[in-house]
Image (tube, rainbow over all chains, first blue to last red; front, side, top):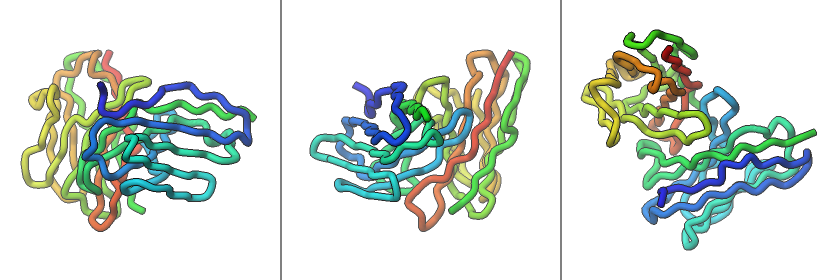
Length: 112
Length: 115
């Protein structure tokens, strides 16, 4: 079993839809959970950063962490064509200087 | 925020040659930098941790004699792919944590194509 599992997609939705992206993990030591957005041939950019369990909201984005189930989610409301990208979940046991373990990434396509 | 740059953004080379990729933290000092490799439709895989003034730490399965890392200053780490072969063709990305921040800041990546 891989440490982090993420459905690669692609996930195709119409503009305005609510998008749900998910990852599961097996390492109970993970405490910090991140979602990155990566456009084609570009480096990842951080979207959401969450410590331990709970929800975090930032504009159209909501991140949820359920450590008891080892399951994290990213919700995107009112999706836009500009949201079309690959979304990577990442996690680490400690912050900042700790190594990150990434999911494979889910490709999202939002059609106008 | 913080900015990390990489140079070159893209390189094409012949098999057997060596290629150097630079990773720079532009507006902060980075005692640690991470090097990742990403194959098409695959995740970022950590290759090594670069530490300023000391030897890099390589992940299992990564050949340290093939992927030479030098962290010569607090703002620059270099990855040299020696005797590159077509199977080394990949997207190489660096990241750096910034003191006082929880996150790592990623560079834009370098696409290496070995013919």
